[in-house]
Length: 109
Image (tube, rainbow, N blue to C red; front, side):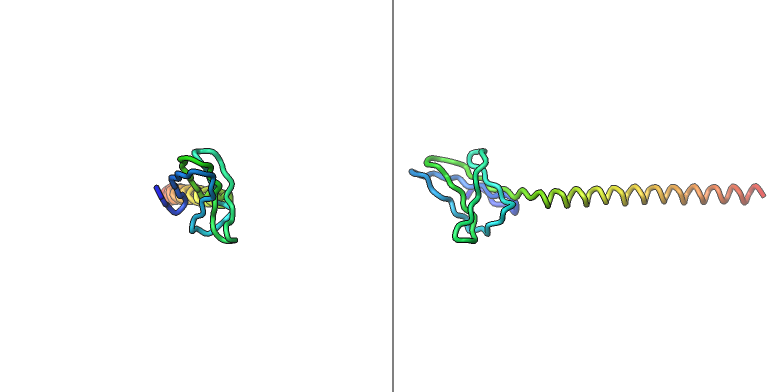
């Protein structure tokens, strides 16, 4: 195995015939496979594990966690964070303006 991170696995494979690479990782539909950079199908081996068909020869197999729901959730979270920051800045400026305006009105009397 060449590399293993929480959202990515990279394996170098050298076979004399086409094989199924079976990983001891639980199958989940959001995982995508790439053989030498080309998209490949991820199969459920033994009803639970991830597997990728690999042709004969030397290849690099990469599996990446690419969940559209995760990306959508991150975008919503970032968007809402920006809204909260904008509202906080607006409210802070409004209060500062009110405080300055109230002092000016008191001094005018």
